[in-house]
Image (cartoon, rainbow, N blue to C red; front, side):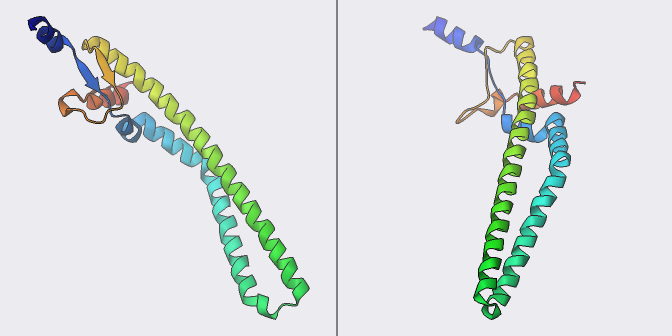
Length: 153
C-alpha cells in the first residue's frame, strides 16, 4: 500500500488546453490573419453574389404580377440559375477555407506538440493530456506552453 502511494506521488500529469493555444498563441493569430488575407477577395465576391441575388429576387417579386407569363418564366429560371451559382461558389469558398484552416491549425498543433514534449521532458512529466472532462487547474501547463511558443523564434 505504501509503495502505491509513493508511486502516485511521483507520477506527474500535465494538461494543455488546445483551444487556448489556437486562440492565444501568436503563431495561431498569425495563421488566422494569413487566412483572412488569403480569402478576403473570395469572401467579398460571395457576399456580392448574395447581394445581387437578393436584389434580383426582390425586383422579380415586385415586377412578377405585371410581367407576361413567358417573361416571368424566363426571369424565374434566371433567378434559379443565379441562386445555384451563388450556392456553388459559397460551398466552394467554405470548403477551401476549411481545408486551409485545418492545414494552418495542424501546423500550429505540430509546433505546440514539440514545445509540450520539450516541457514534459525538461520538467519530468509522465503524462500530458490535451482533452479531459475535468482537470484540476494545478495540472494545467497551458500558460507555460503559450509562453514558450510565443517566445520561440
